[in-house]
Length: 439
Image (cartoon, rainbow, N blue to C red; front, side, top):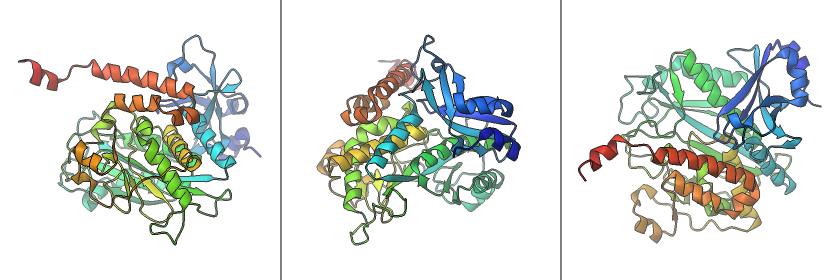
């Protein structure tokens, strides 16, 4: 039985609701709705002008309605009189084809029809920076290798503990927080769950982290590469496929060397086969490509991949097998749309299962020692796209992603992201002036 939001508002003393959705660029959009009006909104949805968001619509298009999923209700722990709701988008009686959450739901429905239940977890990295965005917030965080630095972590105790306490209050099962490899960079982990729930929580986590940082006079950024000399913000995803009841891990085979089943290797083959095409979803900004394929940072390593390769418990590859029964996908960055990221993973993995994709040879080597194209080609692995435009072209040419996510979403995404690329390409940088004025 569906949750009655009007009754819930009275029982939990919620005065307002944020009815939210995420557009193609990952921007969180909301309407602020008083509790007295939530019954109607639960049935009919909150109205939006799609053209005003990154959804490739025009002012002539009909109103778009965000119908909240009552099961996603979160009371803001730092402002419990406000409830947040994830929503699905509808227009003219049909779901919006280019809606990221709808795209993920459809992939999950496809998996369910085949007897699969997808569980995922994400590792969200972010920097705490000054309000003007020009520097990290902690002037004393200057170690060359700052990862796990206890002193730097504890100097941000008020922010980190508040975020962790909020996750605990919400029942997410937070289990560790750490200072990451970049100065001023942190990561917070919570339990994996069904893919849609993880994606909804991922959306809220980014909002919550930014809101709490602002409360403390700081700014949180998930930008892939905010500082050229520091490790970028990744968003590693852990993936496994389970039985419909969620009790049996179908990726697990304890007798196999890496603890992976034949099904798991087919799914992995799909990820490898489609990685270049999915890269524009995993790494969706111009800045993303300054994180992957990057030179070593201050700490000595970027911790981001440069090839389409997989390995065992080795952090220099795109895909790591850290334990039996699951993969860690290390390509995604902090700008990835929580829904499109997982929809693309599922589309690629299900393609691998359907077409018996072979992931190829496992490489148990330090991939950071192989950076030249000729070296990489000798290993029999593919190079990742070098920029957003190359990634978009690969996405547009992918029959797998078009069949899975639909032409409407793919074409709209490429159109809007190409405009973003053109804007970047038309920008004159100081580097160009420094190196070209005397040509």
